[in-house]
Every structure is written in C-alpha cells, then in structure tokens.
Length: 329
Image (cartoon, rainbow, N blue to C red; front, side, top):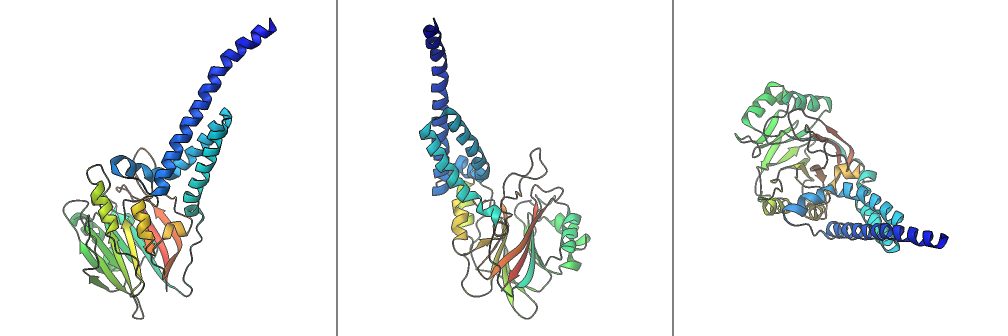
C-alpha cells in the first residue's frame, strides 16, 4: 500500500517538475536572446529600438529569472541565467557607480538642458533653475515663439543675455541656446537630421571658448526609426583639437542604444553616468507612470568632465531638466 501511494505521489509531482524545468528553460532562452541583442547592438526596427531602452529593468527581471531556474533545479537554466545576469550587470552597473575623471584645474561651466514639450514647459521654473543653479549655458528644445516670450518675461535674458537659435510655431522643431557669456554661432559643423540643432562657441572669461551643440533628433516611433538612427549618427564626433565640445539636449536615446554608444566611442563621456547618476530617468514625466528611461544627456569630450549631475521636474513638460556642473580644461 505504501509503495502504491509513493508511486501515485511521484506521478502527481513529476508533471509539475517537468513544467517548472520547461518554464526555466524558456526564460533562459528569452533572457539570453535579449541580452545578445543588447550586448551585440542588434536592435533594429520599431519594436526592438524602443525596447532596448528598458535594459536596466530587463536586468532586474533577469534576477527573478535566475530565481525561477534555481527553484526548478535546472542546472542548464541556472548556468545560462548566471551568465545573463553577469553580462547585464557589466552593462548596467557602471552607470550607477560613476568614477569618471575630471580635468585637473578645469574651469567651471554649469549646463542646463530642458525639453519644453512643445513650448508647454513652465518658463518660471526654468528661469528659477537658471538663477538657483547659477547656470552658464541653457540648452532648450521644443522652443516655440510663445515659450520664448514667456522665458523673457520671467527674466531669463537678464541672467543669460546671449542667445542663438530658432523658435517655431510647431512644438518639436524649435531649439535655442542661452548663455551668460558671448556666443558665436557656428555653421557647417555637421548636417542635422531631425529638429533644429544650433551650434555656438561660448567665449568664457579669459578668451577661451567652448563649443556647445543643442541636440534633438526625432523620436524613434515606428515611422521614424531610420531617421532617428541617422540623426544620432550624424552628430559630430568628439574633437581632438580646437575648442572643447559639449553636446546637450534630448537625444531620444539611452546608453543602451548601439548608435548612441558609437557616438560615445568617438571620445565623449556621459556626464550622468560618470557621476553615478546614469540610471536617473528623465522621461516621461507628468504621466500616470513615473519617469522610466534616460534620454536627456550632457556629453563632454576628453577635455571636460562632470563633478555633479541633477535632474529637476518641470511642470508642463514630459521631460525632466538635466543639470551638469562641468569642469573644462
């Protein structure tokens, strides 16, 4: 009788064990494929390009997948998931640790970038940030004529009297650059693909200059993924000579997009990642969900570095404003 009971129990347990092993194996294959896409820069198309933005969350989910493999006692699944978790940690953790170098004796340059969401961002909040953070350079995206007037009425021109750029009736196209020090607009540096992206040299006290590019390629929605990729790829590489170059704006790309990493590989450093703030999300703000991904960036070439990065909510905008306290050699 006991033998019969043991056999019946084994028959009931065996299917459950088989399904646990199959679930663990399926998850291992899924996570391995997703990790290969991210590590190999294989994202393409209207589905994978947006999805790769969520790699940090994918890394957290992989830990849960490892737990399933352990519970299923599947050695193969455990081995795969351990490798997946290690690879994702190597890709994601450094941006939360920082450790970027700051040029010795560098001069302070405080940069703020903000997307106004079709001109709807609160101008008073932007100007208050400029005043409170003692901002030297303000990069504005989605600058409309009405937003430009509201910024002026809030007192921006008294704080940053120099300006280049172009406002627009439509939300996404306009961009502007405001500065505490004189600006000299540059043309011909690169051929923008996307929205208006002005470039200027900021004449710092003492005669030195820093080149600043306002960045705003199109968003990678299904109909514009090729244009988005071309827009990020068209941004100017980090220079080895001439004025130090800073790219600041809404890149519509995260540190997990291959086209963005190729831009970094030319010699740029992401200010947020270098200060351990690379997982601080900037979009979307003001919706049912909290901000999820980091698509607003300040990049510096090898002659500059960040000592501090902060993000701030801007009522009316779907982006957080990003502040970088830089030191320029």
